[in-house]
Image 1 (cartoon, one colour):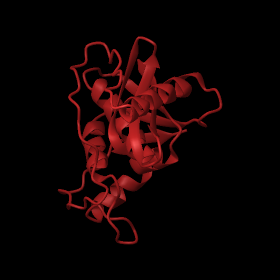
Image 2 (image 1 turned 60 degrees about the vertical axis):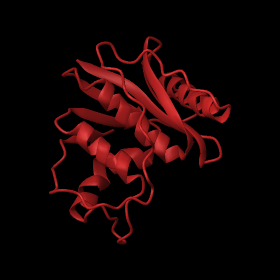
Image 3 (image 1 turned 180 degrees about the horizontal axis):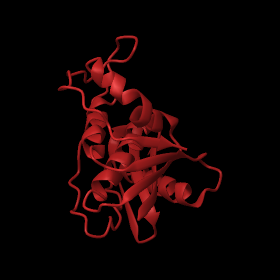
Image 4 (image 1 turned 60 degrees about the horizontal axis):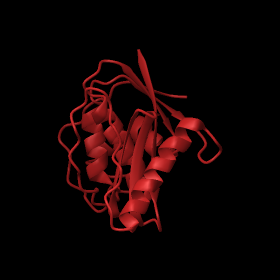
Length: 184
């Protein structure tokens, strides 16, 4: 079986109050955020939490994402960054490294594909994830906790995590070859 889900992030002010969300259907979604973060952090966190929420099932995961940055990070750039000690081609440290390393761990052994969808054009699943991510960011803007959603059936509750440090550049352990991923 294949689980199809949309993942999206939001930041008010970018940086500013930030939110993330993944969405399968109205009964299966998750959201969260931080008082201060960026849109890219929200986009990455949405994908990370989707992988974590579905870790207990052996289904393929088809991720709909409107972020080329996230798709390219996972399917193209991450192996090279790891070989270079988590540095980009220009030698600068990779941004959002903590989140990217967590994604690297979460996707290990998983079967997944990514499909880019254009944001804000009425794609039902993308709009649902976007609305929940924005609602989380707005909750933090008002000083409230966001609605975290019902989660994925059978998944353990996710503990809140701090956002990544944009300046983190700790070297990685030995490179690990990621599982094959398809970009549509």
